[in-house]
Length: 238
Image (tube, rainbow, N blue to C red; front, side, top):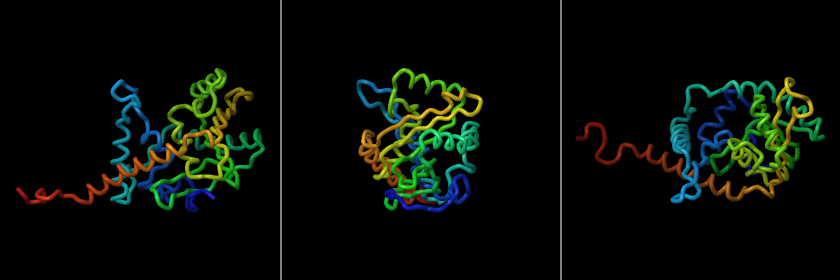
């Protein structure tokens, strides 16, 4: 089993959202680790402003026990994904022969990390990350694959950390498939795109180290909130 504790909730429900509060989840991973363009002074590139915003949001969630936002942010693309995901998984199963299951929410017992899998085999040896793109984005991935892109490099940048997060805590996983599905409006021959990745070839050790560093920043922010007010700055002090 994964290095995670299983929590039996249905994805998208209030109970599922409550489990995510204060945790770094796969959908938040890009904001945590996206970097700006590298420079001579900083060859790796500085982390984007979204990282600091996410640190603050997660710290606020941990202190309050409430989601950082009044209602979950939901785009048309997310709605489309939810509607098409069962069809996408069925197409993936038919193409690969692997039966996939959904299993609620998984929480790390020591780190404030959570995972909701789009699909996985019963033994967790294979995990699927499913996206149902609008036609233009689907075409972009199709052209990348046609041009020879493979593995994590073929996955659109905004989803690479999500893929890493999904399998970083699942030592038995041998392969993660990035699955793109365009829906019935797209030609059948290229409606389903699958980017296979062997987990042994992914930078999972480095990703786990980055997660620990990120969570340390969140913890530091929590400590500052809990230590308020600083000495000499209490209410009524001059």
